[in-house]
Length: 438
Image 1 (cartoon, helix red, strand yellow):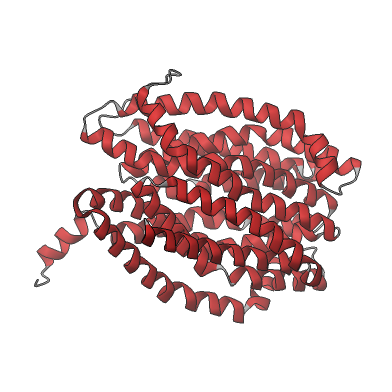
Image 2: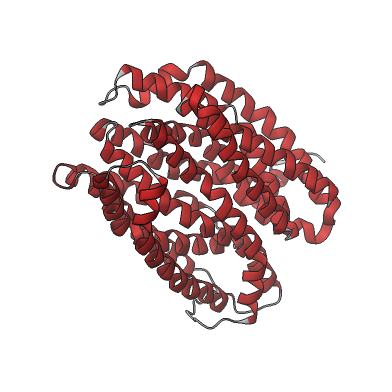
C-alpha cells in the first residue's frame, strides 16, 4: 500500500495499537515520573532511619491490600464494558455498582487490618515496641488510601475501555505533587506522618480528576448502586481467580520487607530505594503497553480468535526483548553514577549508596522477565482464563520465600532482589508454557 499524506492521516486517526501505546507511554511516563522522584526527596530529607523503615513498611501494607484489587478491577472491567457497549447496556449503572460495593468492602477490610495488625507485627517482625506503634499510627492515617486507590482504578479502567488513555496515565502526577508539597511543608512538624497525609490528600485529588473526566463521556451517566446485580456477579466471578492470585503475588513485597527486617536496621529502606529505581524501567516499558494491548487485543480477539491472539503475543515478546534488554544493560553498566545522582546528595552514607546500587543490579536482571510476564497476563485476561494467573502467583509466592531465605544471608538485601528476579523468570516461563497448552 502506497503511503500518501491522506493514508497517513487516516492511519494516525484510526484505531492504532502502536499509536495508543506510544502516546499512553508518554503520558504515563510524565505522570509517574513525578511519583518516582518522591523517594529521592524522602532520602534527602529523612535518610535511612527506623522511622523511614516504619513508614515504608506501613505503606507497603497499604499497597499490598490495594494491589490485590486495584489492578484486577482496572483490567477485568475493560472487556465487560466493551461487551456492555456492544449490547447497548447501562454502563454507568454497572460502574457505579462496582464503586459502591468496592467502597463498602474495602472499608470493612481496612477496619479488620487495623484491629489485627499489632499482634501480627509482634510475631512476624523484629521491630521494637515503639516501631510497631509507629507502624500502626501510620497505617491508621493511611488507611483511606486503600479505598481511594481501588476506586481510582475502577474509573481508570472505565476510561481505558473507552480508549481515553491519557488522563488515567498522567493522573498519578497529581497525587505525587501533593505528596511532595505536604512532606516539604510539614516534615519538620510531623516527621514521617507528613508523608502519609500527603498520600491520602493526593489520592483524593486523583480520584476527583478521574471522576470528572468519566462524567464527561458522552452517553455515560454514573449511577451509584449497592445492589449486587447479575452483571456484577459475573464480574466478581471472572475477577475472583485473579484477585486470589494478586493476593498471593502481593505478599512478595511484604515478605521481602519482613525478611529484610531480619537482616538488620536499614535494610527495609535499602530494599525500598532500590525497588523504586527498579520500577522506573518496569513502569516505562509496561505502563502504556499493557493498558492499550488489553483494549485492542480484546477487540481483535472477537474477530481473529485464539490464533490471532497467539500471533500478537509472539510479536510483542520479540519487540520487548529487542527494546528492553539494551536499556537494562546500560543501567547495569552505569548503576553507580545513577544511584549517586538519585540519592548521593542527601543523608545516605557511601556504604548505604553502595548497598542500594548492588541491590538495584540484581533487581535489574529481572526487568525483561517482568515485562514479558505482564504481557502474558493480559493475554490470559483476554481469554478470561484467570485461574492460570492465580496458579502462577501462588507458585511465585512460595518460591519467593524460599529464594529469599537461601539468598539473603550471603547477599543481604541484594539476595532479596535476586530472589525477585528468579521469581519473575519462573512466572514468565510458566505463563508462556501454559498459554501454549491451553
